[in-house]
Structures are given as structure tokens and as C-alpha cells.
Length: 367
Image (cartoon, rainbow, N blue to C red; front, side, top):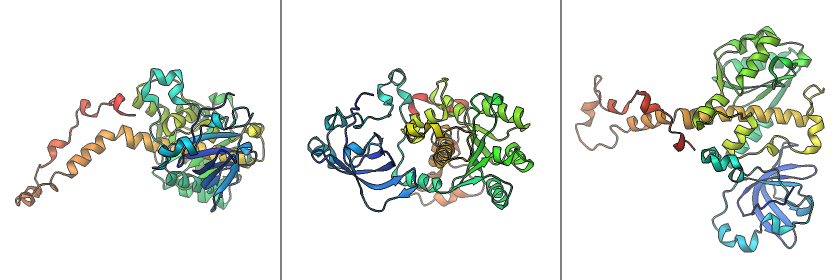
């Protein structure tokens, strides 16, 4: 891998991989001469450890580095030339120096042809902290005990959940290993191999219209559930269909690729290191911690992708109309304004537009 041209600037949110850790943190300090960086609010995704003190890392320790968010500190841009060198300037000859799995969307052929495929948003520190909290709330279920029934009770009252199954890349051709359901607070991993089957309670929950199930590539998932378990999945919200409509492009895109393009987070986040690949066999038992983390991250971002596509894009025009309608009276200074609020008043109704054209997607504007 060629050295990356990433330029480090204070305030960036970094993903840093060492031999034993996968850290996210805000770049607080860089010393090229001593070859160290300092991360603030560092979180180790492998051990689920939130460090309260700054973490200092030597360049030789760093195996891979990625910028998750490029929000730099106000004075960092002016001083970046003297205090924050580019990754390639630091140690270009080192075999591990700042080589990253970051896929630069701006430099790929696809993004040059389709500018609208650039990432929509970058996650804030608060959002990442919430995700870290969910990763600390993984519940692995291997038998129909109290934990099993408590999980189903929690899932039933949710308006929407994320549903991920592994492996289903080839639908019915693969044996079910795990079923992951994520709420906004908790990730439940149902070990179907250990449980032995998808029992009646889970089947009823999956077939019900509520909670709505956020899934990706539903055609594969439905084929798997129907032919393997005689389950007719209900309440489907397919994020692949949604992102295809919003972006106006119908091209294959996995869940992780959709997350990459939407939230500017790459596959390095979902696969902490090449040395862990041999532990990612979905049929190997017991499920190791790294694999559970990967499954949980997929489910968490599946739900986040649903929320983003629905509320930031698909309902964008609706929310705009709500906002305009809500300001019908508040900015008027006429003393007769209260008279317009009588029960049969039609004030503000002109802002409610139902025609197809008013709600048509503006693909170029939904970036």
C-alpha cells in the first residue's frame, strides 16, 4: 500500500489502529520531531474502553490511520504547516507509517462521474459517544431464558428496529448463523445455531408490520427467511431501495458501502484488523468479541442509515412544509391575527401542497 497523503490537523476525529487497539479520538497535539500524536476523548473499540486521560501514540505504533471527521480547530489551519505535517511527510519509508484503508471518495472514478455520491454527513462526537454506548449494551442470546423473553418484550414496543442476518449473501443457500436486532439503545444478537431454530415468538415479531424493520438488500433476506424458516418478513424498510431512490442511481451497494458513502466511515471501522479476519467465521462458536462488535456495528448503522434517509431526504419536503405552515401566525404583527385562528380558519393552508411535483425528489439537492 502506498503512503497516504492525509494531512493531520488539530481537531480532526481520527480512527487509529495499533497492534492491540482500535482508537477513535480527537487529534489534540502532533510532534513530528518526537514522532508522537495525542488523542483526546479516546475510545478503544476493541475493549469498549473510554479513556478519561489523553492517549499519546508513537508513530511506529500506528498501523493504520483514518480521518473520520475533518472538523479542525479554528487556529489549526493557520498553523498546520508548522505543527501538523502530512502523513507522507512524517515517515514515508516506514512499512506501517500512516498507511490507511481509507477509501477516498473524492478520488475514485465513481465519485468523479457522480458528485452526488459524496458522503452526506460526518458524525459528531456526541453521535459517536452514543454509538459507543450501544456497543457496550450488546446482549448475546443463546437460549430461551429470561434474557430471551425480556429482549422480545423490548423489541415489540419499538417503532422501528434494524434487522441484520449473517450470512445471507446467497439467500436460502446459506445456513442461518445469527440474527441481530438493534433498537436505539440496545443490540440483541440471537445465536440461531445455539437456539436451534427461529421460534414462534420471534417469527410473529418478524412477520408483524410493527416494529418496522430497517434492512438492506431485503430480497436476499426475505428469500432466506421464507425458504429456511417459513417466515414472511413484514414491515420492511429497505435502505438499499431508499438510497437508490434518493441518489437516483441503481447500482449494487452493500450496507457497509452505503454507510461509507453516507457517514464517511470506511470498512476499517467494521473490520478492525486483518489479523482478526480468521475469527470472522459466522459458524465458529463461541462467537468471539471482535465478531460480535462487527455485527453490532452493522445493526447500529443500519438503523442510523434508515433514520438519515427517511428524515433528512425522503421526508425533507414534508418537513419544509411543516416548518413553513408552523410560522403562519407567529411573524404577523396585526392585532386581528387571533381572529384568523377560529376553528374553521383556513389560514396557512396554502402552504400544504400534495401534488406529485411538490414532493418529487430533487436528486442534485439531496447531497
